[in-house]
Length: 92
Image 1 (cartoon, rainbow, N blue to C red):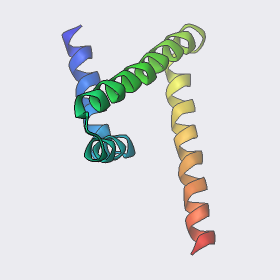
Image 2: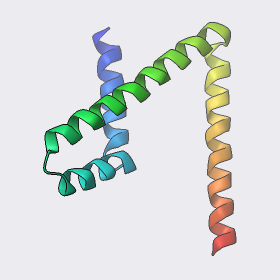
Image 3: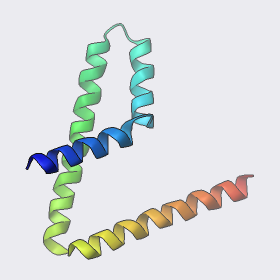
Image 4: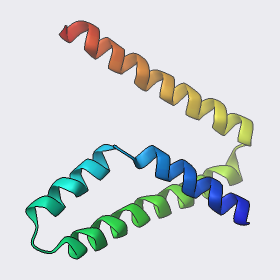
């Protein structure tokens, strides 16, 4: 159980460094007179989105195999990458 916790923590921590969520929190804190309130709001939002991910992941895991989920996730990310590339090529 500790291994799963540490894996989730390190993965999400590294993914969030420099992410738009962190930058938005940084900017809100810079403009706020209540940085701890900004921290509490940001932490609550991240916990809520993580809870949604866990609940949806558990629901999907009951219906689909890990291989299918992995393939679908990879395909989804590939589609997003292609769409982003398409936008870059056609905007430039």
